[in-house]
Amino acid sequence: MKKFAILMCCMGNICRSPTAEGVLRAKLHAAGLADRVVLDSAGTHDYHVGRAPDARSQHHALRRGYDLSALRARQVEVADLDRFDLILAMDYANLQTLRALHFEVRPDKLRLLMSFATQHHAEEVPDPYYGEGDGFETVLDYVEDACDGLVAMLRARLADSR
Image (tube, rainbow, N blue to C red):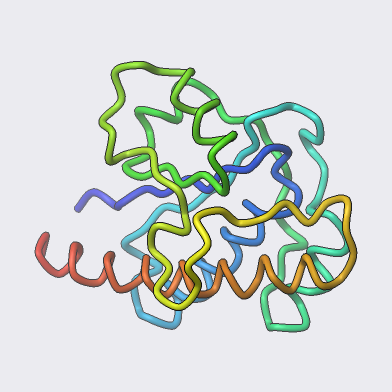
């Protein structure tokens, strides 16, 4: 059975997208779907390739039970557009960068992560990099909400593919 593949994307892959990967990984595990989904994260830029997530992201995530320490930043590759079934950008700027990589990708394959949110009505996950603690908490609030919606979608979609 082919696994459903999801890629989380932000600019540098050290704050938002590794947080989203860590949160979704935990939620998939809790939902019993971890073995049916391939999950990764990447940055649209090469600023931090090979680095661990930002220490502040790790600190705030760990306080909520998400361990990001094993993750390492990488840059998105054109091949990712074929490799992944769903590519979720944290904001419009990164969504546009991803779209520029491949003009013929299905429109529903590239989306904003917040399109799955049900509690928060923001369209983007704000970049906390130049801020302090509150920004990282906001990222977690938004990402947890969107990942809950994403897990609900996956539960329905994967049930149909059995």
